[in-house]
Each structure stands twice: as structure tokens, then as C-alpha cells.
Image (cartoon, rainbow, N blue to C red; front, side, top):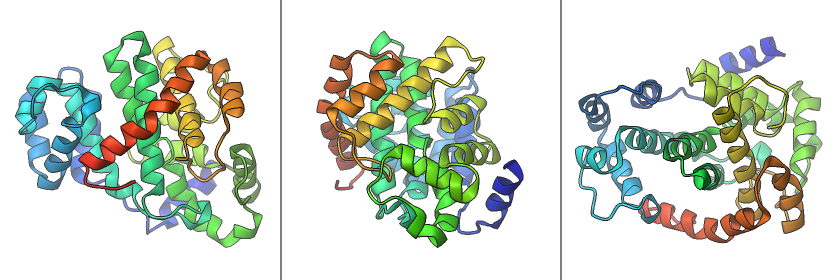
Length: 287
């Protein structure tokens, strides 16, 4: 299976690697002692990235009380880790915007699903009051479905074998039947190829099976559960990633066992469309 995925990564020329600035930000995500000057230096090399960062930082759900006018200003108001996470999110936009015919996703749909999952994961991980966990969950939610970028091309040759408006379980089963692995497993390997940190690789690979037996720290387990549940909530509110939407009963049956109260999940479902609209508006995009 691993050899097949390696070959897929090598042959998929249309799947470009991460931009240099985004790769640098990824390394900064893992450096708890990074200096503010280094963060500013990386971000300000890319004017488009800086612009998108400021749009994100000024969006309502990040709670900034005054206008963020530049990368240095963002660092003062939000802190290094938050700014690096936001800049990384801004840098992933172009990569996740394209259409995916195999998943019947038009241009922008995967991006909106990724943003919805990121926002939801940030909210769920932050319920315990841990801001750092919320930021990590946002990043993990943003990239959880990168495996679909890798599988889109080979799966396009087997459209008749892929479910139309099927459940996620049916989609995962079809992927495995056709290729020998699913998009979560492929995404984990792609994350390794892109030098993602281990915690992100694990979340990407396991986001459809967060209760797999694994030796992991409590914080990592909580992040994985937050992304898995947020992925389901995104599907519930019409921002799914290639499978049919979940109704309320299906959402609660799948997500409550992950440790969340039904009221928290339904509250997130109520607020998520508005949060997504706000974020897309700040990015100059429409839903």
C-alpha cells in the first residue's frame, strides 16, 4: 500500500508542492521559541500572503478589538503562534481551491469544507479554554482532506464505481476497493512528503477513525476528536467534502461518542454558517 501511494505522489504532476513561504511557516509552527522578527520576515516576503493574513486577523471571530494594520501589529495583538497559524491558512488557500471531479466538488467547495472544519475544530478544541489547542485544531482542520488532492486523478477513471450522494463510509469503502487505501491514509503520507509535523500527519490519517487504538498524548487525542467531530458538523450544515450531508440524528450518533455534548454540537452547527460567511467575506470570497 505504501509503495502504491509513493508512486501516486511521484506521478501526480498536477499536484504541486507547498509554496516556499508556506513551507517556512510550517517549520515555524513547530518552534515554540521562534522570535517575532523571524515570523515577520517570512510573512512580509509574500505581499499576497500578508494581505490574506490581515483579512483573516481582522475577521470577527478572532476577537481583535482594533484594526490589525500589518504583520507586526498582528503579532502584538494575537501572538506568534496565532499569526503563524493564520498565515499558514492563508497560504493553503490556492492549493485547496481547485475542483475535484472524482468527489463531485466544484471549484472552491473543498476550500469551504476545509475552512468550515477548521473553524469547527477551533471552536470544539477551545471549549476547554486552551487557546493553543484551538489554534492547532484550526490548522489541522484546514488540511485534513489533502488526501483528496492526491486521489482525485486516479479516481476520475473509476467514476462509475464511486457513490453519488453516498455516505462517507461508502466513499471510503469505494476508495479502498479501487486503490487499496482511502483519502485519509493517502493524506497522511502526503503530509509526510510535505514535511508536516507528526501531530498533523496523524490527524490527517485518522480523522475518519479517531478511536483507532494508538499511543498518543491526551492533547493529541483531543485535537483528533475535535477535527473528526468538526468534519461531521461541516457536512451537517451543507459544507461536506464529497459525501452526502448528515442529518441531526446522524451527526449526534457519530459525534457524541467522541466526547461532546449534543448541545455543544448543535450550537456549533447553528453558528458555523455565519462564521464561514464572515471568514469568506474577509477573504473577499462569496459562499
